[in-house]
Image (cartoon, rainbow over all chains, first blue to last red; front, side):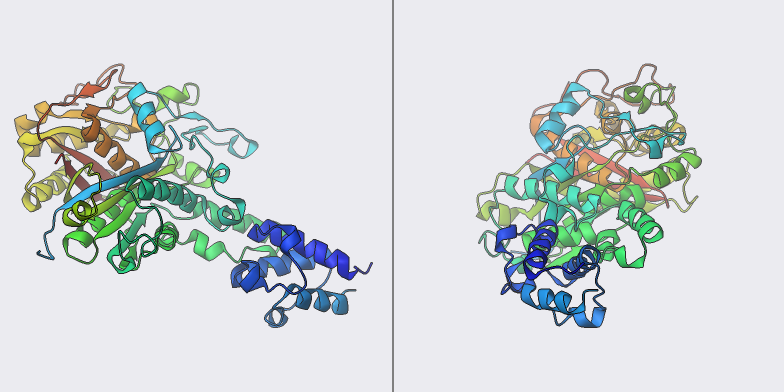
Length: 82
Length: 420
């Protein structure tokens, strides 16, 4: 099944909350993982792996560096989901 | 002010141990003669010949926020908790720089462990086998590296003079404190957060130590299993936790009006060069370390009234240590109240030198030597005054205490402290 933008934001918010402890309501489309959500480069790998599993999508390492904001990740998954 | 051979003092202590989640509750447990040894619960321990350990009284996951805890090996979690307590106890309220009491460039961190992030390594190998490559945590390397606890504590307090991790098995914690004393004495730092940590309660290390015939198999009576100096001793009991002290040059401590627990006189070091894991039976190497301590500090055997012994409850090691003490101290050993606190905490490996330094500092501070429990029948070869049953008051006036730690590999580290 395809996930909606709303479902993706909600899911990413839960993942970021689990990994970085940021309240789910603070995880918004315009937020930067590094600057706003306390997700460093190592934790970003965890976010990506959790997102792959949850949304049944593959995010190759070379694409991860382009995912600066929550919106970037949502757009990427919307475009690439099965 | 000379930048070398400066006097070093202890201004803060912190611990999380099998007896309590901080130094106060640990000290209370030591004075009460309480054992921290419990049965190991869970199916993964069911096949082991040893089914007891001294697990931490307070789980670090209940203390640290989860986003932080999940990036730290359990040994680093313990170290951070103990270091935070010690840092606050020394009167610091924020990281160096932010707290103007110490400059980051004059602050060091020296925390050691015997075997590093062994549970992280083993757990992540399970993940690799069961869930695949992609699921191996990107935090694995910083978590398993033995310098992880020291580095994480250094980050916490903003230490920039140097972050170090001397590794010498069960002498690691003591070697870290000795290294820290030298860092201050030589002028490289004014303040150092120093200590030892360990978290190795996992079936693999337990199976390995048990197969070396190093561990007690008294599964039926966990609280009686660790029994240094008793004729029935049959090996050590594995413990976990951390002990950390804040060491500071005396002039730095006095300038900021800090409370001073005692002076950290220095260390004595040697190596057995005898066997990779067996203690040298005559205590030759231990005696060399004690002699080195006397040669390189102004400690006088006549002022030593307390010893926190290494005494892990192994048949050979406990006796070799006492032989060495008798050889170096002679009749002066008669006025030394000897405590083997591993009878209560179990053996924290690289953490031992940390928590036992905290115990030694508190013994001088309160002038009270904790008891050694489970000495039902004193080994006749133990020719020393072992504190049994009740805590023993220590004399008034200037008094000193020694803390011994020895490690597989033949490492001998002895530390000395004296009231000011």
